[in-house]
Image (cartoon, rainbow, N blue to C red; front, side, top):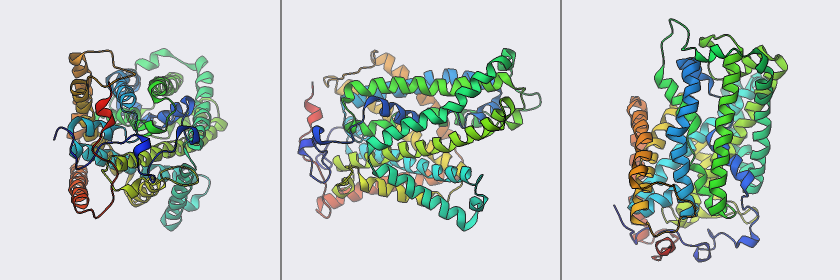
Length: 472
């Protein structure tokens, strides 16, 4: 469905929005994000530290793991970050990729983009409180299972969500502190490893007799290097987004890649390979082997802080996406209400938190598989939207523009799209069933909102004027 329909009007400039969802004037805003906190919010959207990369070594051996984290950013991360930089600066409103699909293909596909990305975001969000409790149980074993575990997940979710409610400035600078502290043990680990490194260990293809688990290998790479576009939903909250976003994406990209590669090179080069032990959490054991138990405790503490940062960044993205969807009239006006005290989208935070609590009862592996599937559908639509907007809205001013013509852009999008198709193809029956039901729910939601709007059963924001159509 191309073009712009009057059924779901596009995003309005802040001064024309309804007061419930409108952003206050810039001089009165306390939550405008500066460059440094945005860098660390993007970093936590994507990485959060080398926790979780161990499975790549266990699946394919040191050489393929190192090559994967060297090459995959060029295949996947850089194209996604470049697209985000261009479109977030051309259409700097809350909602990010929802706006892009809406502008490119019309309100139906904008709504579907919102459904896929929001569902993948809140499902992903559900995994972090469970991981948080998994670390807490090392100190308090009582929360390992049963009712105590449920209560611990509940209260940790509510506590982490309240921190988000206090505002993006608080969340952003909290992310800076969490990022620096959670990376510090790996800096120490890497320095202590230097005298022990044998470069020949980096060339190992794995232990004899152990096959390659390519599905786990690629899922690990994908899981640790995606979600670059999530911060685009915060574009309306960023100081000078046309300048700040490209700088933040570039800086976060360098930080994420080095944060993966340096500890991976240090750990694989400094210790004999026991591939069967390379699974999630093994970095803590390696820290004990290389430096002693004190560093193991530091790594585990860093992992706990990293989970907090991941949750805060993901929740911010989901909440402001809902705010942007309210601006676009994809969801009712009430969904875009802001807090009077902190100017945060409290309805978006509350809805995301409630869905995350409901999903937290699922197995972690099922959560990850559903997230990857829904996210892949959204990314295919995002690549298509980028190409369509470059062609159909070439006159829109782009403060940052990917330096390539249409043929080059098609190639840039085609390579990661092939990988997305692979991710979709390797899903199991449960993933296909759940993802199909959630996609069907997204379609029903679109037509239900259309019906409610036509009958004036619910209030929506927006009107027929679209400021982005007149930019040049």
